Length: 67
Image (tube, rainbow, N blue to C red):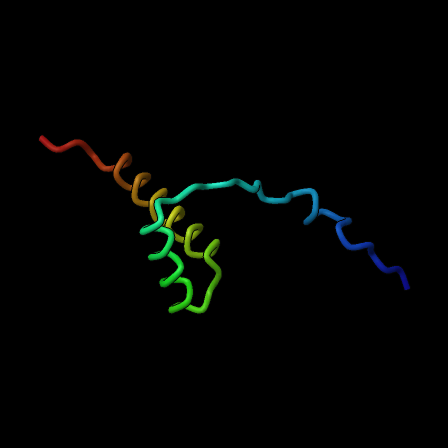
């Protein structure tokens, strides 16, 4: 039986980028409250918000122009 070392393999090579973000205190506290209410990590809340923002922007840019 062959065992893989932790950190080896395809998943490890496709690691997500890590970033550092500074939030105003009131926004950070609000994000913390949301994370606790949903029982998820603070990072999950921020990723979810970013995905929703990107989806909304994509939808806005693909709409036909109004006349």
